[in-house]
Length: 247
Image (cartoon, rainbow, N blue to C red; front, side):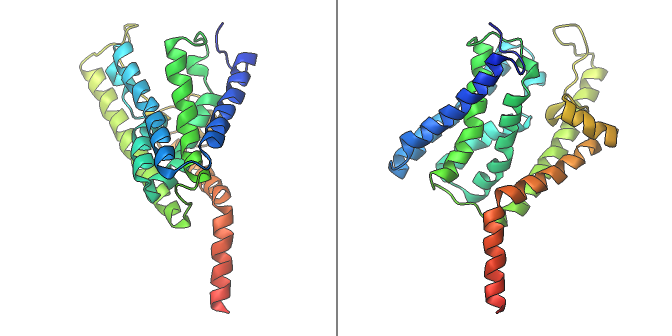
């Protein structure tokens, strides 16, 4: 049975993913911080395991470098859990949304057989990459801080820009040296989708701004809206505190 896109199996997998996160919350709630960090820390390495699996299994390292947002999330997550660094954990409140989006828009692996290695190394790491950053806050291991909004935006923009430059360099290199993929085509990468869109939402952005790299800038406006919603309580508390101070 294949996973499918918006199929019964796909929708059930999303529900199960939410249940996995909820079960972890209730199992760890009230436990010691040391135990909670240890459990979440061990689980956080699932993303790195998936990165290694992809690099080794497909024999196409240039096409499976850890340069998508989910991959970057996977690399940063263990450090964020074990150090409980404020900036890293607040950053992952945004980056973890990429894992959720990958689960929702799973078209690249929709034909994968359920519980095959490809499915398992895609599905479970993405569930944990989405869930663990949320659990870090829900279990009060770290706190949301509106002072981290600016660093989150700057880091994300810098990373996106650097990865676009890497895309351009790799594509120029593979074209110049005729490096071919398994299908006999010149290798072309599109990390963080900075070159071309690959889903309906990004295609809408590309219609608005039909240029590589720049077409993703409307997404940064959505990111700002998303962060305002995520930090709404903290922003309101800050405004209230400023008013009280002014009085």
